[in-house]
Length: 406
Image (cartoon, rainbow, N blue to C red):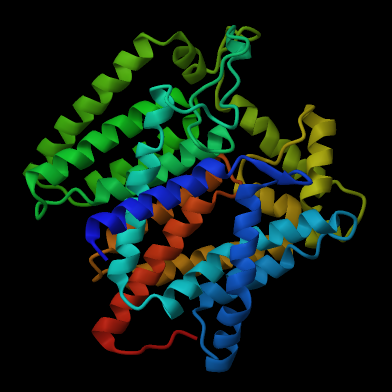
């Protein structure tokens, strides 16, 4: 197929799916949920069957699958079974995508192409919304608390403002790692222009988590090795980002209030939008629950959210994935969750010789930061992590031949 046509089809189809995701199809289920459920059903049986037949699986994949099945057993699971199945399906996406990439995609270059151009598409997808060519199908961050009733932050084609900002941050991380000396000057200038636009769009979402993720990961990418060229590049790019950010900050009162944690009800400021209160209550309503089994199997999502509503007046999760897992899945789920995260870390560290090691570390670091300050499920970050872990594995197979990690 002609490379230009191939790119055109990729961008058109991927943006089309992204644009249609907020549309409700039936019974409160959006197009985004339905196509992912269909994808997982399509992947589940052939992928798992091959794993059973070959009797081989990476340890982190095994524990990720076990943790997914643990979600089916909680204090909420029987009463809210359909929602529990949805949560289980979402959690299974990561190990199934990894196994699919390993089993069905022969060349790592295909995965690199997928992730790079998907990242570019995500950043560029905000352009028509900023220009007013397209109207979002969902509502962005509600600005009523900042005195702008009926106005909303930038959301692009995404379902929720946090999913837009966090996905944008992951796309920017990927593009940042594609800026290399081997590229032509035009390629690097294109990537830099994408990052500047992505940074600008991220600020206009009024969601701080995405910017926090990107800035911390950017510091890692700059500081992991130090030399004169890198110091100069760091100073120049930091000056540009700081200048753009400062200009937007000074000319946008809502951003000032948002970053100072102020609104029309609270002029004194604060930090974290009440996250510490959410964390404390999430731990407390898990620890003090009268049912002894809750300590071990957790409250599940629905009972946990109901308790949070009683405590803080909001039907929410903990806004911290680590605490959320402890609250919803208990000690058993918490242990499984940390085990598979540790095994991912160990898997990545074994592949320091790979060209894609740094990018994989950056994506994994972004995931851990997102878990710390937000939590929740976002399909693109699962796609990015599964892709780069599969790329590392394919590098290992290419260098050392077929290897086992049972």
